[in-house]
Length: 351
Image (cartoon, rainbow, N blue to C red; front, side):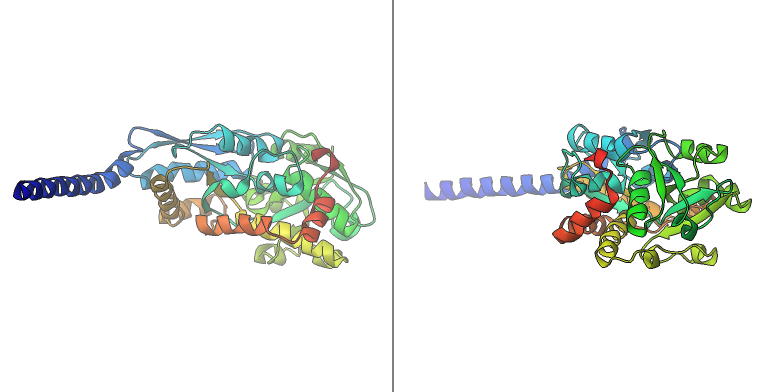
């Protein structure tokens, strides 16, 4: 009997070990095959005219090549509330199986920090990669009587913006309240394309919060024909191209030290976040790895980089881990700095 029992137990153990080996061998294969025949949707939280769309469409054209199973990759724009509409969709409604990701705006991640109505916790998102460290600008058209930030400290400037709570609104408020620039901010424009058109018509003097890389890619003729005045480059480390054009940083115009800390907090986050790609919470770990590896492959692809250079967009890869750390650090910032940032950047209507 004992001999029979020992043999039975040995048979069970052998069967379990064999089953474990089969499961271990097939699990990676199932992960690799998950995307075969599927569609990966990239949600963009802005309109089609923005820099986010330029980056996402180029990246999407390469991304499927680097994902096992070669899924079809499509881009869908979901503008609204400064990018918060797309962030809320990704957090609450998007499938959590790795078939939907998003290119979210930094402002949508900062909503909760700013005290705006928000039903998402940005620290719960899964961060895949960042493609760029963006520099934001304030500018006026050649039709404006105000050509420099120094002049804007003395003369009224009509600055157009999209929705309250968007980068165009937040950056205009930030510069206005820390430098005492005489910005009169007019919200309600449909997107950056509408703002450029309003500048060309002389309807507004200028706008804030748009990307240097997007300007070069979308409107290079404005620079070539000197139809735009760049008032300030809003960044922590100045951009060499903008330095060569004589565009100042804001720091010498901000006299208050707490204001400077608050502005630095916002800029440091937004530059590090850049064109970041995000997955919903709770996406399976094996699929997250596939997506992160795919972004790493695309952002280092020589053909992709050559095409990016051709259309004048800058690529500065940021790992998903670094993007996640940036978000955590933002929400761990000292309370006085956060409170001051809210006071200087946020329109009261957005809270």
